[in-house]
Image (cartoon, rainbow, N blue to C red):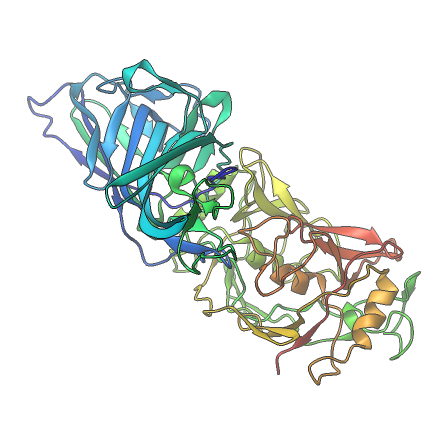
Length: 570
């Protein structure tokens, strides 16, 4: 168990029930009750699991809470601190427990939209198989210190210290260690803070702000799903069983957890169904209109002939031309099936404000608007133009600025966005400012998304076929185009270098280094990959995607980058 990383998938939900007491002769303050319970599942949408990760549902979940605050917003400098019954209140989250119960409390009046929970520790058990001369199935109990605190009996514990106890047939073996907590921004709107050896999670209250004031009764039920909340990757070792969590005794070669619950507690609002963040396209990626060509040095009038340098670039192919329709307020993309807000609101918002704005939007007779995911916003890019890189006939007055997406950057408290000046795709501090354009549309990804067929991978969502192994040697842009045009693989001759937008289809928003499905595309290096998309000026540069983090940037054509070819699934 040495080197454990507790990176739990963000999976918590907060549901808020608000009622008002009769003001006649009623209480002068607010009655506040906050309870918490872990549930096996909730909501109608669940995130896709990471490829290759095994999961199981932990049991016996308990948590020690050492603080609770209500906030007027994510940036509230003066949150309302709620008094607890003790320095640490232990909650039995399986059965449900009361964190705060204040009758007729004299609390600061106000409208509160977020809750911040401080956690001292978390305890739970998972099924495991131990290997110590003989193979024994039993239970592994994990007790993790989330904040530095003083435990029972005055024993001091530091953040990241854990004790793991394996029990079977009445016998128990215990070992301990320490890890660095790596908790991050949640796809469902929560954020975890681990600075100063303190662990706190802050989440929006779905359903709107609660009102604290005379005669108000506020009941907050913190519910979060734990199904498949414990994850690990199988290790191929003697006696280890695929699909079971194997622990060696002593634990030098144990299957280290890939994702545990510590970072998930109270993290999200998934049970409300408010957090659909599509990871992958379930539609073809729209092309960019044919406007210009490059020969590698300058802009030319036509696509270079087959066999000539620069043949096969983005504008040489027209597979899914953009096709928009509009009713004045809404733009319908006939290629992707998505509906877009036509005009963007004035001013800049932070990430949470952008999410809230889209969730509250009532436009063109629809109320199911949301902040777009990274790949959804990328679908709007039009690299045939700049400043902004978007179709201004469909989306007039779009500023050449950074636009938020709903997709957090994995393992970093950052969120992806697209800058429509040139089309850069990168991250931004969620507390920073950006513009917002909302989207609506269903997300029903195929299961599985990829099908490996020998040397190729079929993308069942985007309708593409990919070269499974990239070329072994990095190359310049002209050589990358030629390599794909000349490729013969899987009895197909129609291979080409993918466009920048197609390269972005492969970015796996749950992973970093590499940010790609490591099962379907095993061995992919976390490096830059060439696209077939040039830029108009300077004419000797083009776009590439990094599979370190999914970012997109412009590079000189003579730079050496990796190459993976694609063709349409027809």
